[in-house]
Amino acid sequence: MVKAMPSQVYDVIVIGTGAGGGMAIKTLCEAGLQVCALNAGRRLNPEKDFRNHRMPWEMKFRGFGDPARPSDNNPGFVDTEWGPNIWEREVTFTTAPGSTWMWPRCFAVGGKTNFWGRSSARFGDIDFRAASLDGYDVDWPLTYEEVAPYYSRVERMIGVSSSVQNRPSNPDGEYLPPFNFRCLDHILQKGAEKIGVPYLHDRIAQLTENHEGFPRCHFCGACTFGCDTGSFFSSSWRFVPKAEATKNLHLRTEAMAKNILVDENGMAKGVAYIDRQTKQEVEVYGRAVVVAASCVESARIMLNSKSRHWPNGIANSSGQLGRNLCDHLYGESARGYLPQLLGQPSFPDSVGDNTIVWMPRWQNLKNPREEKFIRGYSVYPGGGCAEYPWYATQAEGFGSAYKRDVKRRYPTPVSFTVQAPSLRSDSNFVDLDPEAKDHYGIPKVRIHFQWDENVLKMWEHSKEVCAEIIRKAGGVCEGSANEPLIPGWSLHETGTCRMGDDPKHAVTNGFGQTHDVQNLYVCDASVFLSCTDKTTTISIMAFTLRTCEHLIENFRREEHKRA
Ligand SMILES: Cc1cc2nc3c(=O)[nH]c(=O)nc-3n(C[C@H](O)[C@H](O)[C@H](O)COP(=O)(O)OP(=O)(O)OC[C@H]3O[C@@H](n4cnc5c(N)ncnc54)[C@H](O)[C@@H]3O)c2cc1C
Ligand code: SF4
Image 1 (cartoon, rainbow, N blue to C red):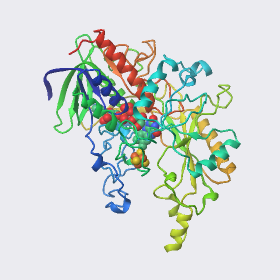
Image 2 (cartoon, rainbow, N blue to C red):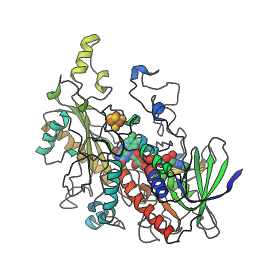
Image 3 (cartoon, rainbow, N blue to C red):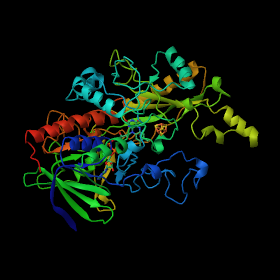
């Protein structure tokens, strides 16, 4: 039964409160618009839901989680014993024959930014014009110069620590001082230099100085369990409170958007959602709608928004909604250890849970086709004193001699994780599963995805290079993963509401405004034209800021009427 809300009409309905949705509600509310935000899950309480320095031995199941609960290995479930019931446990997708995918969805307010890895490099000219350089696919409908000021504003807003690097593939931004290299980084950097590979500070949205009322990082190493002091950027610490302070935000939690409602002209007039507590369907009305539920879920909501005007999903006259799915291939390119560090004490600079350094794209820079693959990849080196040393299960012995041996080797392990972009292809896309429905009777999304030949060549290349770096650094390389990680693992999926100037071939224009439905905007990585060698989140925020200022301007010009 549909329960319509009383006659209130908001200026804007925003679906999602993560990187995209959070930036949208902050920007729109601060401009004076009345905003209703729908969020599929609950609000987190940092004091209870984050780790707060609790050690494994303080936990009932020593940090391994309740064995009686469904396995956390099941794709889509990534709850931990420190933060239970935060990630969605229901699987709302299927995979087409031959495809594999995992899709962890954090439905809490703030979305995945509560627990993300914080790596925050800008896309560059080389990414926006990639097609002109190597002839594959099409260029983005905007230039780096157009987006650069938005990157700068986001960096100043959230605080990004890094160094100026002057590299062609990675524009420099406005940074706080970088994190110090760990001992292992100084050693590996020398190895990388010997074969001409850059080994530099990552751009990381984690504070090396107090910033905007938040304290600098205190190196507890618990980032992926949530930061109790807000020392890295998350939407729930930084954006949602700012939006609420304007008193222009009405946040509805446990509100799972189902479809976008349209008026008699096919324009957006609101959103139908399921109240997950009452299980009732509710309608909420607005003059404009922003979809920011993350790449695949945004496509799912829009594909499920069928009407007389939009029989194949809203704003889908191009047939491109759900198409062009891309992802980052992740995998362990090499692992080993540095004997130079045997027996060294462990220091806070060995915190294992940080993206302190990276190896930004160095391939195909002078000539777009100098390698056996086109475009390029980047790599994250890791290591140091992670909480539970994996090799402890393999070490021999017992008692105090065993413990001494484990401790002696503590600072030595190193590994490399590749981040390689898949290419757009006609065979990678999402659609609605004609058979399967979720718990609420909403059609599940079906994923069609396989790694392409180009990205697999990058994977092989990275294995050779990273093994060589360990060896040149005087370390011992012990191998690499046999296979890349399952698609979807990186959580950097892009492309399902692709932007472009031509309405026949793109879902949105360069402002993330859908071509077909002028009062419908998309604010997540689904609008990205390609998956680059960089992570997506800072770009989601920069693009969303730009989109929302365009939306505000449309209200000023009365193209959208205030409620
Ligand atoms: C462990 C980890 C490490 C990561 N590392 C990095 C990194 O180093 N760098 C980087 O750039 N990115 C990283 N990411 C990915 C990053 O978190 C995402 O790119 C980013 O959060 C995406 O923002 P978003 O707004 O599109 O989606 P989310 O942040 O997922 O937000 C989506 C929001 O939509 C809501 N929602 C979803 N469906 C519905 C619905 N039907 N109705 C109502 N609301 C809905 C959710 O509740 C949520 O609030 C990492 C993620 C994780 C988990
Ligand atoms: S290491 Fe720093 S950013 Fe990470 S949780 Fe601890 S204080 Fe927060």
